[in-house]
Image 1 (cartoon, helix red, strand yellow):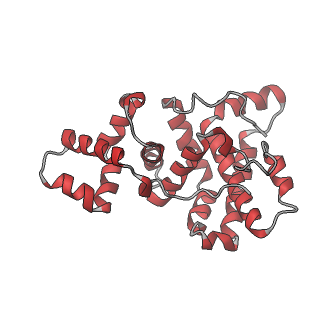
Image 2: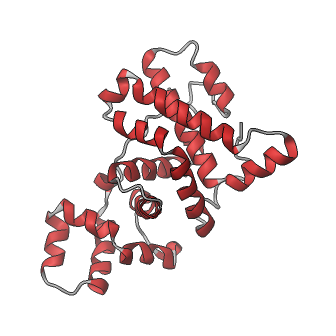
Length: 234
């Protein structure tokens, strides 16, 4: 069964992450209450994660910053979506968690264990829906949406190049598949149990905007360079 991504970047902030945020506060805000608020007030942490100082610090030299993947991807995605007009922290948290998961190559596939067959292509994932139980159908639908957003958002040049040279699926295919899959996943009863109904529907409605925001982010960053170039494009 495919892994169900959860919007949990902000609750996975580590001690090292807090130290990094404290350094940003020290550079950007010189008032005595800041550190106490950072520790005790989750809303203040959200404000810090939204601050330009934190975003700029991550962009200066990511290789020298010992922060966790959840913090790193959340901040980058949050600012990219804000610039695109999508001001929803839960949405940014979900997409940030998606990138953190998919930065581990095996997590891009429709399975994460050693007992199920690997599903490298969307067509394989669609075929797997036919014999799947309801829980697996939900997780696969959500995964197809995530997979489509990840590929279309992070690797747009590869998609366009392969589509023009080899007749591979176009950007319209990924957008259509992503929107449909997010919508069906959001309509599934499991979406309410996982508290993902609203987020999945938002991603269905705003898929092109979110995709373009990730395109812009991908063009400015190199955080996916360690992934193999032979990403399955279906």
